[in-house]
Length: 278
Length: 151
Image 1: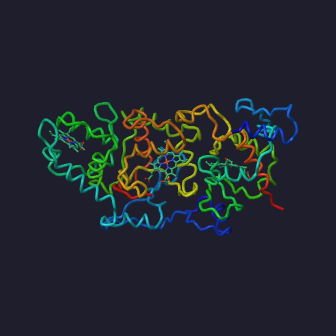
Image 2: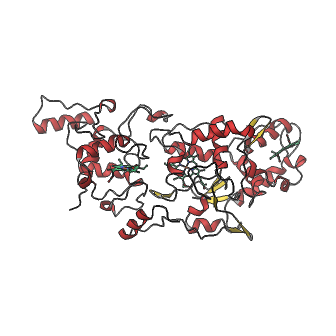
């Protein structure tokens, strides 16, 4: 990829063994479908020329797990998602499937989320909980709990391979602006912004981690680290804690706006859910 | 703990009348990014500094810097420049300034300021009002950096 060639050369000379550069020739083909893991950055992303899926920066072993759904550990949870989708819950005696006969009908939705609905910014998790509380008479699921991630992964899988295409203007504009501001604000005792790591320093090693652009096209993501599916905002929380900042709450206006902004930076990359990361 | 070290050091130096004062983060004086006065008045310990440099909860300097003196350690970061020979490039006062608050030397840098206790946004409660490193840890790390010379 050729960023920071100089540091890498120095490292090579010193004989330190780590694969610090992304292999731009690696191809993510799942079930015969080629994913777009690298493309031209949307015009509104001022400081990047190209955007890359986080997959590009993972080790060969981690990358391989996503090539075949039988190897992808995230699929265990998709089976749970299918069960939950068909399970009756709440006072109305309904399951998701009572109203949404074919889960395939959700094709295309993930690529557009979060979105504006009735003047409000809505995430996938909020849509699911809206159906649960107002249409099923059921308790909302925990924002990043295992039931929620299993079902959002099932819904997101229906859009796999489609390019992310989140709306950034019109009614979305004020939310997008707010998300952008948060993206460039430094937080925590370490005083770092998302942009310091994921824009200024992607494709470099930060101790044992190979920094990506922090894209969300692969969410929910199966992480080897915690062996479960992880939500977008759960990941944001982790990154904020790592800089010793008090994270915003999942489902907060701040995190929703940030999710919209970060998702839009990936416009053009394929939806990869459920992706595999370390 | 810190008090004892200071007291012991004072005794060793035979200057029992001068009780070394720790300079609080807000009182550190920077001149073009450099800090000439020791933050504690107690000489830094390079061995302790080497440990604090490595420790992920303290300096964690290796997260961003290559350092050949630690070639036995895995995972040297590449975000910042290699620190090999850093004492040949910078004076002790400059290094103290860079470790305490690198933003005074490198405007807008990603490198955290290790000796400030305010001015950052939304710190987790347990870190609020605190600096990442103690004054003595800064001195120890500076003493360690001073050993990284190229001949």
